[in-house]
Length: 525
Image (cartoon, rainbow, N blue to C red):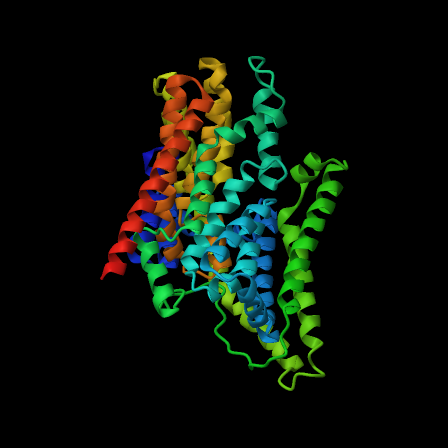
């Protein structure tokens, strides 16, 4: 059952159930149970053992604490506490009132969110959670739905990180390229130059970013996203109140007018600044070189996030304590209540992450990704179609496993071997197609940790985020696939990129014209 077509069933079960039942925890649990049964060959005792190991892997792995996952969970809890403290101090309200006098339109609020998503490019986890904290008070004030905010966050984080050399993703991928390029003399690129040359070949990342700014500039929306935006615009309800919203505070704190913009800005700036500083320090300590690439290759992102989260929390506590002398409602007891409220708000997101990691662990044991990759490597596909095939395969793999990095690790060496032997001139486009497809699949997957964190950062129901983002991701993927087909047929990266640009321009023109017709028709009525 391991490494066979049956290995695809658990992720399929989880994903289909998520999309049909809208119950994330139940769906992930069903996927975990089915995967454990397959790993154990349906032996009851062994199935229980595998279930226990899968649920424990978030905390204990390979005989040691799984600090990577633990630190991510701790940071999420810190973020909930910071949110509660900022709300308690009145910082959220003060910042929103300040922002509305300067960011006066819905378009400006959306464009600011997209721009901040690109500026915070050092890590996708960091991006997903930090951008939400910065942008949410502004987008809330302009009645932009939480689902739309989650789309902006998710669709700027990974696409920027995957083409930025100065990021945790860039450092990891440059290291992977070094291994691949060292095995062949057919190409003479350095790992860094290869990565930089691959950036314009990542059609999905470029198409997605272009679409983000188009949807930020215009009021064009599709399918479920249109319903969310209409409700937010007409009723002021930014999300469905009947659904679970990660990070949404359920406790109400005393209202007062002593809040200042600094009560929100200082904790967030502290969080960002300390996290970046910690990334540099940990990267230097592990790598031993004061070199930007070495630092980002070795940096400990989760630990850095914990330092940043702790510093941001401390800053928020100090700022609220400064109100004790002037704010009659302020008390030390409310600080403790804010801690409890913030942790409670983030527990659903943490639980979803634990189950998603458990399912990913079992899928890895089933060798689902390896089965999919071997299916392509054994087929006789014409060389010109390999980039688009690798794009689709990477998308399927990341969608099924919930991890783009896992797909990178499996598919990049396989794609490198295939292209070095078949067509070395197409090596970099093929590798770029793998990166593009993995990000696409990760965007669509409800069991992806970055998708979960984007929902959390935006304060959006997770399934609403998946359902609203999926059509946008599929459109960008279809455009990208067309670009890779053109690239394969012509042998030119630039013609393929031009094809992507032409398709995007045509779609943007069509969508704008359709919106103008609808607006004119509504005005005539």
